[in-house]
Length: 184
Ligand SMILES: CCCCCCCCCCCCCCCC(=O)SCCNC(=O)CCNC(=O)[C@H](O)C(C)(C)COP(=O)(O)OP(=O)(O)OC[C@H]1O[C@@H](n2cnc3c(N)ncnc32)[C@H](O)[C@@H]1OP(=O)(O)O
Image (tube, rainbow, N blue to C red; front, side, top):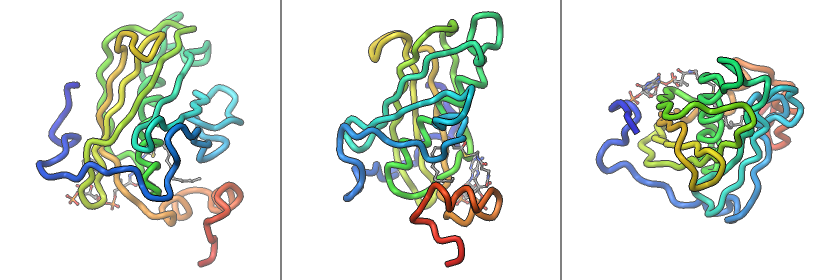
């Protein structure tokens, strides 16, 4: 992965271990918002990622490139592939039970990805320092050990739930996150 110093964990960054009380290995992770472009089951043209964690610390998902995801004819749009990496990385840090948002996302495109291809995505965390999480992901064509088409490195920043309430739609959050108190 070609990455900048901004997405490279500094020496001594702690690599998190599976959170006590977090998802058991093998668990399928639900969507965090039904209309999310990445994982929402109600999004008509979204990526519909249904991620799972094989080990409580990393995340895997598949994404089949559809008609709605084209850039050049019959080829996936690079921004859509970046969105898939963003989503699977976001799910991998959400394993640690704290809300994070993308601060920076760097993407390497190694192979074109035709419509109809299933990309096998995997994301993991390389370290956390304070509010900053350093993460990485890859997308492989056709099989978990297929050729790598996309690689990404990211810096995610921890926020609190007030971030989503203040800047987004507090009623939608309350409707889908029953543990979120609208008026604490
Ligand atoms: C329904 C709701 C459910 C929610 C449930 C939970 C969510 C579950 C997620 C599941 C999966 C989602 C997957 C998709 C995830 C997205 O796509 S999120 C959407 C895209 N991202 C955004 O909209 C973020 C927009 N940016 C911001 O809001 C603010 O800039 C941020 C990132 C919160 C940071 O602002 P801040 O809190 O004021 O913090 P700030 O002091 O500026 O930065 C903190 C540190 O990070 C560094 N930093 C910040 N940004 C950068 C950057 N771009 N580059 C380098 N360093 C940076 C700063 O330099 C600083 O470093 P230190 O000085 O501490 O060393």
